[in-house]
Structure formats: structure tokens, C-alpha cells
Image 1 (cartoon, rainbow, N blue to C red):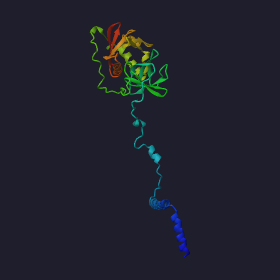
Image 2: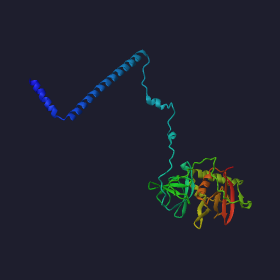
Image 3: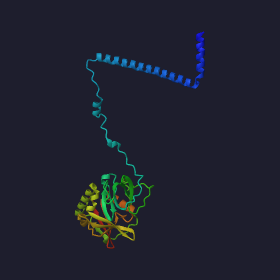
Length: 317
């Protein structure tokens, strides 16, 4: 009778408790118990597997007369059985700089030597009226900018950690137009302007058979290939303008006048074309410099005191 009273009392107490919470507690306890059972079964299985493997290994050891040596994974890796890993195979293709707004620095880009190899790239930049040739990572005089990258139509500057674009003189910056990559198909060389003037024979100075000049030119090319910024050692180049428009580039001898004199150049000559490319058109001027990397003969059209003179010379026999 007492038991029935106790059960009845317990039932009344339970009915007063929140049923939803009780259900949640019961479910939680059941889930914990089931998880515990699965864990026991799993560890039991693993234990039996380990024992079985141990028995098999022990049996093998008792049959074999030779001692079992431990396998050294690092020793096998050091043999490079599948070849040595090279970081070069995972070189990431350099992405075109998208977020590089036009610079506000008062600089003029008058020449570029664009190359897929940054060590061979250079740019001729005018700052405060002075023209200098810069290589990658070199500081632009009079500014906090350094040369970051060189394309055929522009250069990328790094100014206080921020990338900025300096367009080739005469070209308009457009953030939606991607830079002209220095890599181009050698079999499809850029074509010169069809508006090139016809020259008569008396305007031509043919230096292609001048072996002394060819030797000097080859030495110059080799020097510039290793250090493009050395161009200012051989030539002083300045933009020539009339009524605000570029009419060419004035050439003056530099500290090493050997090439200047051997080529038959005269102080004050104004270069207007290279290999048929019009230097007064910014985009063609960039292409002209690029074409010099592939050509073995050079045609340089000069304005010499109002008279047009073409000088031909060879880079390599």
C-alpha cells in the first residue's frame, strides 16, 4: 500500500514537471549511450585487427632467417626516385595589373624596352626636364616611385606601395584597356605605317657593309641586353616638339660617342622613323623599339636640318 502511495506521489510530481524538457533530457541520454556503445565496438574491432596483424608479423619473423630492417621513409625520399621537385615547374603566370590608376606624377614616358624577362626591361622617363633610363625596381629620380613593370604602351610604377600607371607619351589611359604584353609572335612582326615617305637614293647612307660599325653595333646590343639602362651611355635622347606635337626624337652623343660617330650620326639629328615605324605616333614608337630585338638590319630615318636622311646599318652579319 505504501508502494502504491509512493508511485502515485511520484507520478503527481512528474506531471508537474515540464514535459518538453524531460523529453529532451531523455533523448540526450539515449544518444550519449548509443555513442558510447559504438565507440566500444569500434575500439574492440581495432584491437582485434592489431592483434591479428601482430600475430601475422610475428609468424613471418619466426620463419625468416634474415633480420627484419625498419623502412626509413626519409631515406627513400632522398633518393629522388621520381625526380627532384623543382619550384620552377610551378611558376605562376604573371597576372596583368588591373588596379593601377593613372599616376599624377609629372613624368613623361618617352621610350620602353619591354621584355618578358624583367632583367632586360627598361624605360626612358623624363622627370623635371631630365631624361633617364630606368631598370626594374630602380627609383625614379626626384620622386618616391620605382619602376615595377614595363609594357609596350605603358609602365607600372610603385609609389609608396601603391601601383600606378604611366602611359606612353601621347596615349590616353583607359582602365578597361589591358597593357600590350611584351610577348608577341615572332612570325607576325608588327607592321609599320603605310604612310612612310618614299625616299630617293641620294637620301640614303648605306652602312650595312661597314664592318667596323657592325662590330660596334653588336657590342652595343650585347651591352644593352645585359643592362638596358646603359643606353644613356651611348645616346642622349630628347623629345622634339612643334606646336605641342611630337615631331621626333633629337639625338646627341653621350659619354661614349663611338657608336654615334661610327653610324654617321650628327649632333642634333632628329629621328622620325625606325624600320618604317613612325616615331611621332606613340604606339608605333613602342613597336619600333620592340622590332629592334628581332631585326638584323636597321633603317633609321632622320630629319637633318630639314633634309630627310636614311641611315642603314647591320646589327649582325
